[in-house]
Image (cartoon, rainbow, N blue to C red; front, side, top):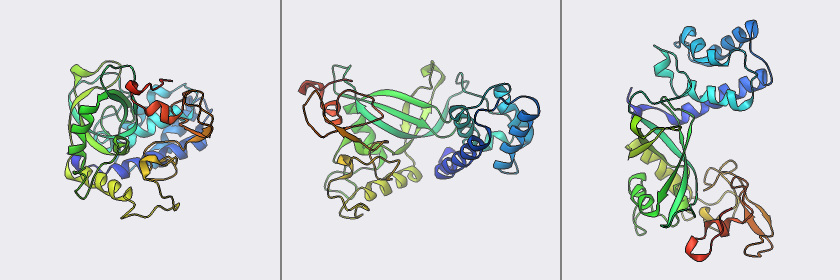
Length: 284
């Protein structure tokens, strides 16, 4: 099946349905014997009828005897939801290596300044949403030059165009295809080549439109642009970072009500972390 035909939103909804149902029923359970059999039956009931039980069970065998938690269940839910076509004919086991090169759909989950490099760069966290490494998060350092190159494919236009970009953090939540190559993989999947077919570009441009205040009024009536908003995308789909910021004093810039990103777990505020190293940014 062509990856361009995959419905990523459907994969994500199915992953959530599987995860939520199994977390509610099996968190804290040691799945052995009859309890493991029930675990398999319950999972089978959450998947399309055409997926054989045999391949579902073989995809779950590594969990036999394990005590389940949310993280283990979520990893399983991702792998099953993102590989329904493969599950018709074979099991899908946890990723340990990349036997063959493959194009996979991916989504940018976060972006932050990379202060460890001498050239302006960002650290990206990219979620694989289908394929052998489905559910895994790839962390890569991207130069500003590469980010600008990528934006042309994602769907942005010049500032005078219909889909302008005002800040690099606006690429968060955008989707593309990544070409996972065995030779670029080590402990995590690796990729160098990217493509953005029209189906993913449509998603990206809908997101750009959602973030344009002249086209999509803010549901919270805020006047600032989305890339400067403290509300994360777990609460608002237009958010340019995951978690909603908290506010407290920053010891670096001495701002009394400075924004802090809970995901960064930094001693320095968002403004200090996002400032280029040449301006004296702090790296928490």
